[in-house]
Amino acid sequence: MTEGTILLAEDNRDDEALILRTLRNRHIANEIVVVRDGVEALDYLFSTGQYEDKPLPHPIVVLLDIKMPKITGIEVLERIRADRRTRKIPVVMLTSSLENQDLTRCYELGVNSYVRKPVDFSEFSDAVEQLGLYWLLINQPPGPPDSESA
Image (cartoon, rainbow, N blue to C red; front, side, top):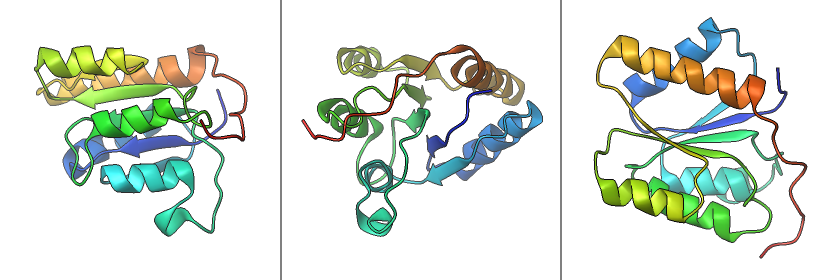
């Protein structure tokens, strides 16, 4: 198993609970940091705001909801990819959006994966399980981020 933190940016507490439970049931022992809006996600990634005094290692993967308060997931993805320190972090969009423009925009910005949240509990659980297995057990993450900003 890959060591490191998973950043989960999810404002829906039911989806959050299901994601966390599914990952734990698959014995994913990585620390999972949950943020509930786009501003908090960026604060975590760039050690600002409430995370200012705690420079944290970058997560091994970001699970990012598109429709979040304050700043959307697409805007967070854009900021991640625009900064040299974070552009190599794997980002998986988790969304209920059926908008083709969201899908297209995310891939234009360099998302690693785009997963539609199934409405069905069992299907959603299966999708999260597969994400965990792939991104934490199979995928080889990039080396440490560069210390200089873009």
